Length: 86
Image 1 (cartoon, helix red, strand yellow):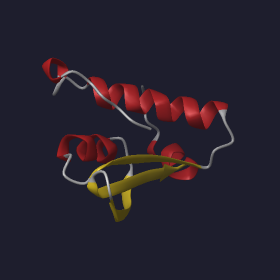
Image 2 (tube, helix red, strand yellow):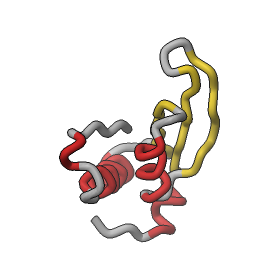
Image 3 (cartoon, helix red, strand yellow):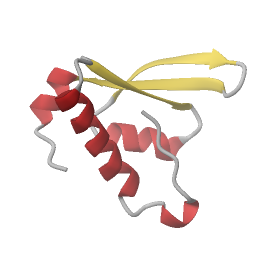
């Protein structure tokens, strides 16, 4: 899962709401047991969106493009337990 939004629309909840809707769609319409979000480790706003929608930091690794990438994810059972309304 990824989210990019023009800076004019930051801090209005759009990324969080659309990310929640994507999670719901993924878990209701696919057999995936886990959804992942990758972002540059220094991209704090994207990390906060992942955390806000219930994802947890799973791993950080070095890479050539971003120096360090953070991996967040949420499982189907974790998502179901949250009872998130979109």
